Image 1 (cartoon, rainbow over the protein chains, first blue to last red):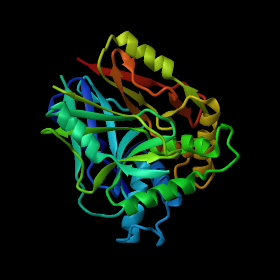
Image 2 (cartoon, rainbow over the protein chains, first blue to last red; image 1 turned 135 degrees about the vertical axis):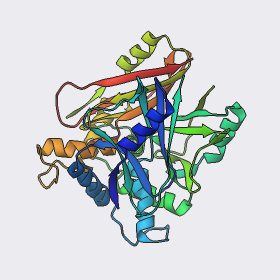
Image 3 (cartoon, helix red, strand yellow; image 1 turned 30 degrees about the vertical axis):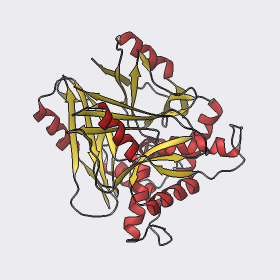
Image 4 (cartoon, rainbow over the protein chains, first blue to last red; image 1 turned 45 degrees about the vertical axis):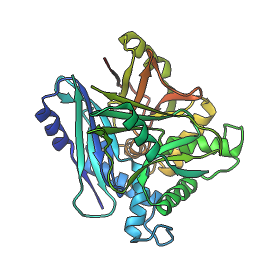
Length: 121
Length: 121
Length: 121
C-alpha cells in the first residue's frame, strides 16, 4: 500500500521525447495499482488512500480469491482509475501548481510497469 | 446490472482501423452505464460491481426520479467513469496481461452504444 | 460546493478551434475541484454530489490541514477525477444525448481554470 508521486518521472519522459505540443498518456499495466491526479501534499495523499481503504475495506468476503489484499486491490483500482491523459504544451506537462501524478499501490510493494506515451506533431 | 468484458470487440475495432501507433478512445454514450479498466477475472469484476452497489445503494430518496435503478445508475456511472483512452502500439491496444475493458451496466439490460475512435498517423 | 454544467463552454471552444476530427482534452488545474461526464439532469447531478459527500464526509480528522473543506476536497477530487478526453467528430464533441460535462466544486466558490485542448489534423 502507498501513494507515490511520479510526476517528475513522467515529466522527464515527456522532456526526453522532445514533444512540443500534444497529449501525454500514462498507463498502469496492472489491475491492483492505480494512477490518479492528486494534490502534491503527502498528507492529502495519505487522506485519499485512507478514504479509498474505507470505501473498499480489505476483507475476506470477496468472490475473487487470491489474497484479501489482491482481491481488494482490484476493486480499489477500479475506483481510483489506472489511465491518465494530460496535455503537453510548449514541451511541458500541463498540470496545476498543486497537482501531482500519483501511483497508488493497492497490493504491494512489487515491481510495477507504467507506460508513458506522447503523441505530438 | 452486470459487468461485460468488451476487450475483444474494442481490440477488433482497433485492428480493423489499420492504425499502427496512436490513441484509442472509448466512449459510452449513456449516463447510466460505465466503462472501466478492470481485472480480467469475472469474480473480481463481480466484487467491483458489489462494492459500487454498496457505495451507491439503489434506493428511493433520490432527487432525480425516473426509477430508483435509473437514478442510482447516474451516480454509479459518475463514480465508475464512462470514457477511456488507451495507447495503440504496433497495431495493438496496450493493456496489461490481467487488464480488461469492462462495460458496467447500471440500469439495464438495454441496448447501449459504445464508440471506439482511433487517432493515428 | 456545487455542480456546474460546462458543456456549452467546452463545445464553444471546440467550435472556435475549427477542428473537424480529433480529441478534445479538458483539464481542471486545481486539486479541490473535479470534472465528470454526468447526466444532464440537475437533480441527478445533485444526487451525485450528495453521494460523493456521503462517501467522503467533510470532517476534522484529516492529516492534511488547511480547512476541513479543503482537505475533504482533495479526496473528493481524487474520487471524481479531474481530466476528461472526448472525441471530436465532424467539428462536434461526441457526447450522448443525456450526457453533460460537469465541473464539481468541492471547496469554493472560487475562480477555477479549466483548460480545453483540441488535437486534430
